[in-house]
Image (cartoon, rainbow, N blue to C red):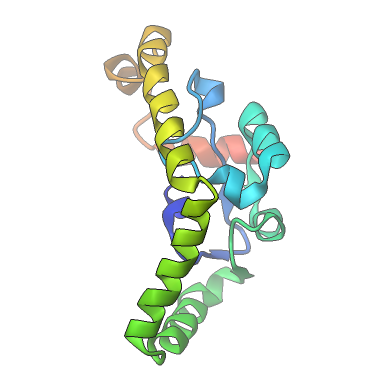
Length: 155
């Protein structure tokens, strides 16, 4: 889930989030910040079930900063960006560095490296299962997002 790597996340109220990797024989997505985003128990539930969560739940869990109506998503994002852009760039850079260094001191960087190793270890297993690589691409529908959205409705 690429959104996890972002400093700030604004989601539309109809946004859905999921990490379906365990369902497909993997451990998790490549960038594994979920224990920091959700805490360990919610992360396990999220991974083990692979269910989609809505924007409101993602906000309560700390994955997203705010939720706005889809019609106002671009406008609200620009308001936040313009507010941040009024700040001193040097101060912003150091503030971000302080936050990042704090989570690194808590083990974030090492945990990310360990998690990526585990992710890589699942690739041969997923190839064998046919959920990764050429076999997965052959059976994948042309419109992957339509399939995910269909599953979101039925999950």
